[in-house]
Length: 194
Image (tube, rainbow, N blue to C red; front, side, top):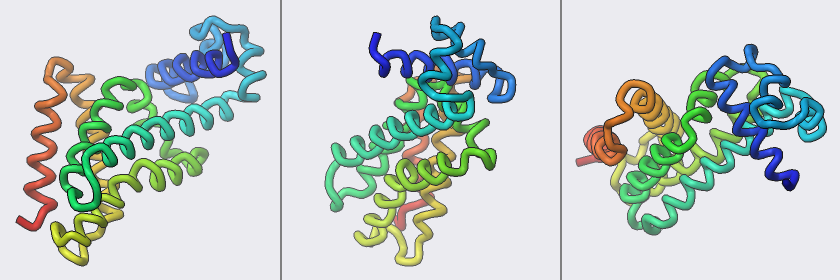
């Protein structure tokens, strides 16, 4: 097993446990046990539980940001900002569906002061995808010139995150495409000029 494989196993174990028990309730022993490695492996790879969690956030935010950026790029160029916005919402829903425990960790744990670097990265990378699309929509005249793209990007990301968690916990049988259609209708009805 490569070092990257070991780190990924530790990430999966840590995110599952933190989603179940919270950061404070999760021990290095439990992470190592769930990953099927010795406790020393955690310290060898990360140095501490805090460093493991910081690396986990960085890893997860990087994967999420890449998913959003790839969806935006695949949906069309600057001439199609609303199509890109719809694609990014769907990509976020799919990512959070696939990585549900990471969604719960994002929602519940990372907003503490200790993880401000992760919040900054989330803001710049993941929410930045939303903000750039909204800025393109302003430039294309699809949104009013004084539209606050930063606040809107945060609101959209948070809305999709909350809806994704609610679906996973309370309505897992609801098809992702239905959830996406409802969100797109809501967004288009409230965000666009028309």
